[in-house]
Length: 199
Image (cartoon, rainbow, N blue to C red; front, side):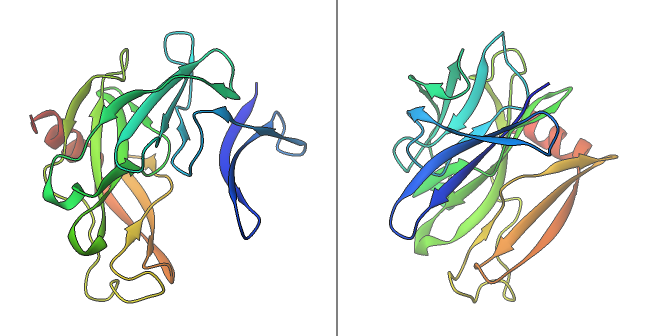
């Protein structure tokens, strides 16, 4: 079995999306990501969907896109998945890491950028068989910077690069204004119910 991870290479001037490939976590291959993966917003689904690799990506800096491919390192087409809908995400919406598979659908933790460049964290739910279909989206942020988290190198920002389910909770590690990090826990059943009832 192969395990993959995306990351962003940075040489101080330019960024380049890359892919790590390993079978044993002792030996790694570094592969390029071609075509549509031009920015930092790519996040692989943890398994193939309908026989194809699937990835969330950011094409234009404003919206969430989804792409499917037969080749893990070549992504030629992407479809618009989400556009900003609420004031707290009017400037930009993007993913906060790979989708998480639940019995109710693909849970995607998102980031939204609103007025005054405040970054907040939200959540969306997508159909398991057809992740182009949004089941629901929170109409208010799940996490937003509080008074202790607002000041830092990049103020007014909370941001996550991945979450996980542990027992009945969703664990969300997140950074605060680019100066420190912490985590939040959310009851998974309550979150899924809220998402399913959000439309």
